[in-house]
Image (cartoon, rainbow, N blue to C red; front, side, top):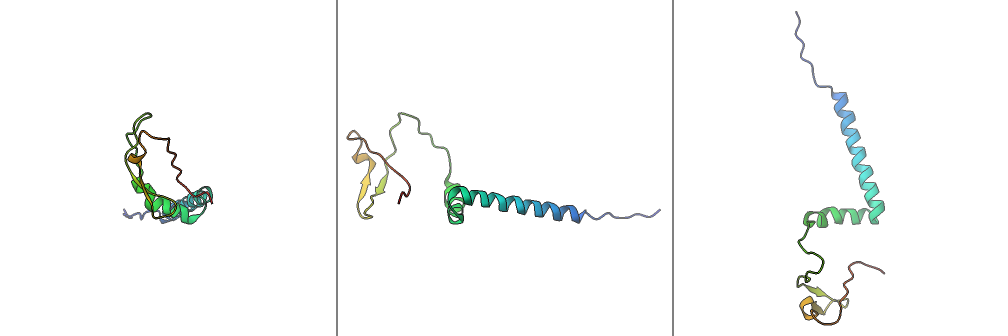
Length: 96
């Protein structure tokens, strides 16, 4: 009686690894297309995703106080300065 040790099926592992790499590449390509480019995807994955969490604000809650920099880059504005005054609209993004 001959005992033989069966080695793992390396061919299966190679195809599985190749399939995983292709799926990841296709996902990165789709995200690049939807987000505007590879740099935006990298920035999202590197900086935005780790801080992404659900907050506890609800409709009607007062906005948390924050200090923001205006468009000129020098002037700072606190949200608490605007509470109870005229409506304030914050636009985040680049529309140039």
